[in-house]
Image 1 (cartoon, rainbow, N blue to C red):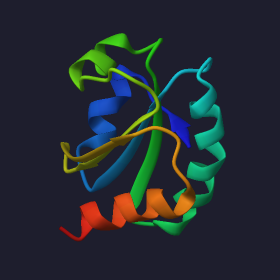
Image 2: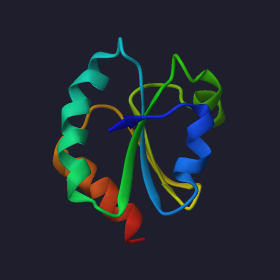
Image 3: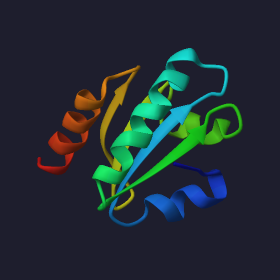
Length: 103
């Protein structure tokens, strides 16, 4: 998963589906979630997966009301369509994406 900064963020989420993991390097649950997301990423060719470090990108975290991490937001064409948080198993991440896309 590619880490994006504020300059890249808007262009990244502008078109199609984008799954964003708001994380921090010191966050235990974030570290546990990272390999799960790495496994899910190749299963969704129509979804771009990226990470945003909330310590480095505080303005983005504030813009999306990130109060705890990890927070996961799925965007469609630049608009947030679903949001969840915390460490989750692979099946839950898949359900989160599938449910948001198939609404």
